[in-house]
Length: 259
Length: 273
Image (cartoon, rainbow over all chains, first blue to last red; front, top):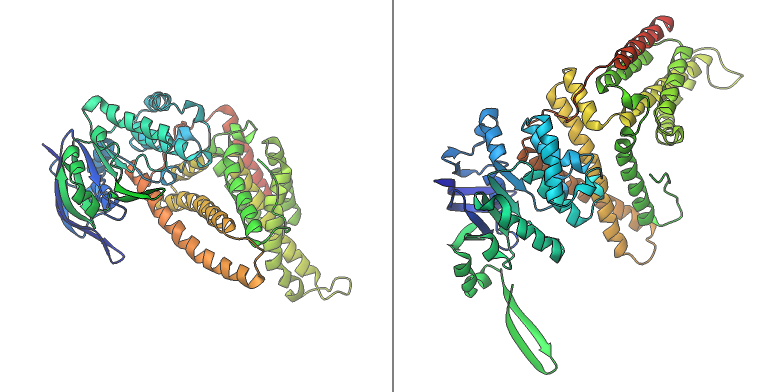
């Protein structure tokens, strides 16, 4: 069964076509990467998939149901959808608006009306898992970039969503934090969950994806397994995912592709 | 919390940065203060919201200066027993409220017809009218500051919903609070970046140009960020209603406090007529 079916979707804002006549299908339980350079439309597509914004034409089906504005305004449809689909934004600051880290992580479960004892237990558990228990009483705005990213991740993972949408999850993280986030994504749900990641980072593609969709100027330009996409140097260069890198060692100049 | 004020010794950018830092500290301070152990912090948020609003209404309805002054003294006493530094309230509320309400009240001193005071071009009735305005503003601001400094913001919003305040109003209130923090944060980052590219002191004309350009960019950036925050809230199931983890439960002390607030508000209105 298909998790998401996107059919001829177009989204424009302020005169820019961010998603242009896009058609793709994401199977249930898959780990998918939306690959593209800055401005390719991958973040916009994630927001469209999460029912936060709506295209001017075309459609998105979630397990066969239309992800429409009407549906999102209907609690009976929207609440189960929000329980199932979680999204981590690229900029953690937009996700942190509560007075303490604990309140921040508890925000989602409260909105979805979980029992309060379960919320307390689950928040403690996820803070422990992400090794940020010591931050629970801190003001989120005062944390470092890496800590903010972990809190933002915790605030979504606490909901244990069956579908996780991640927008540049390792952006602006130090190498150790990047590797920890990647490990978490690999282990998440023991392989039973669907994870859709928007990124331009080719480094961990094979670890986090079974399938890649390459976007350029809002259009789908290629799809394939990570190995297939990584082997297509011309495609990666054309879509600005790699570039020619020059070294100069004394008199010698050496050029090679760089991610 | 550091309790410093921006000084005027640095350049425009330095002073703006220091002022923004001070404003952010002040905005975040309320949450810290609300988690302290004080008399009002122990009360049910519904009692505080209802009781302190009732006191504000009584201040607005009172027609005797001494009854407003009595409530003002009571508000200061509440500040003192709720682990909120009186000095912080004085610097953050009383001066501001005095300057703004004083500016509005000033013309009344000269324009209100009545008995001239000590041969000056002001009248006794004018002074009385001005004093009412200033005292009402000072007292109401102090009462609301007591509420803000002793109650977590989310609890205030939830209490407002319990009192059937429309969800649209509560959402706007909640988003405004988040918007202010975002705006301060964004402005702080903008001026830090500007400082890193500024070597010498700028001329007053350059300062003005920078201030005008920054305010436009700041508004645009903050609105954009605010939209993103709202989307992130929606993504986690937010649809306007306020939920908090703590259950509100009225205890004996809450009923007693509610009765005391009601009695004081009623007495102030009746005696002050």
